[in-house]
Length: 426
Image (cartoon, rainbow, N blue to C red; front, side, top):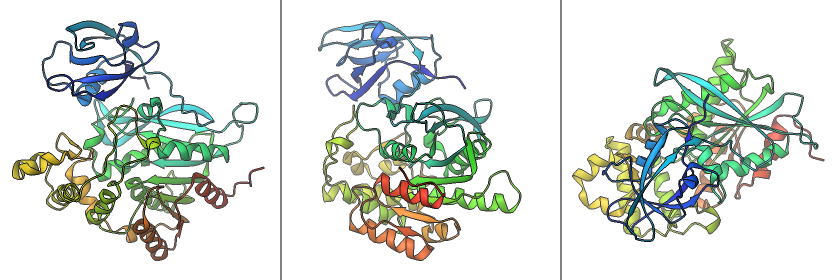
């Protein structure tokens, strides 16, 4: 599966130019952007001569629609000076360095239930395997923990290129590799090298189909022990992980290609209806995120007012219950737009209304109860007492275990090691 085109920048939004523009927060050494003479703090105002408003999504689409070696004409302004134009020759996206230990292997899987540009969608799989003390590959097949991402659509490569901590998934990966697990991550269609429709357009069932195809592919890999596979779901990915675990039970019962999942960990799930859960999440982000959780090129997270929380919740309610896109909602309620709710192309938090309708209709207790594998419910670091109570209710109602305090990667790795028969660390 070919690597995609690479421009060589990280961005932040710019308000210093009329209309939309992109300020370069960082230019990657050795990239086409550097070779063309672009520098940090340059403001890109147009690409290929187009005069339409430029934002991050438009810029990424322009790069993704090209191949390594193609030339992109970039108009930019430096230090509020006149607009200059340069040609940037796009390179090949560099091999990701997750700096979490282990060795990275790139794989791919076809997703028959999701259409791609010329056939089934093709998704990039990132397999991290542990190495021995000399840095050589482990010879014996490894037990595997497959990650199931939350609803946010962000390429794993993009996250790994950030100079800030690259998110909860990568912190878990390091701890699991240290215990001898292999780790599988998936770039969904429309992200990274993966081909297919935009990630934002995937519905509830297509999301499950992507991860199911990845699991079917990875259990055939001779480097993986197919009898010792666990799932680790983050946020809404925890619900998809439960659906995958149940699918593996059905697969095994009918002689299918996938053995049953041995264990399931769900981080940041809840037993409340989605809109109640969303209100708790919105209330939680009334408090600014610590600097360590801020991503490079994004504005600092600031506390939300009660008015903003109510307005954001109204957006969630309208999307989840009435199936409205944000465009339709803002047409009916123009006053809501001023809250600056994070939406793009009519989507909320990167997903369409059908996704949230399925979340609202979901019975979390029933979903996890039908999973026969051992289950662990874990908290995010900044979850408050209401989230801990929800995890306890889920654990008690579904026969699972739960971590009453904020979970650490070590807690989860230790639990998984015990469930999958891993030796104690020396």
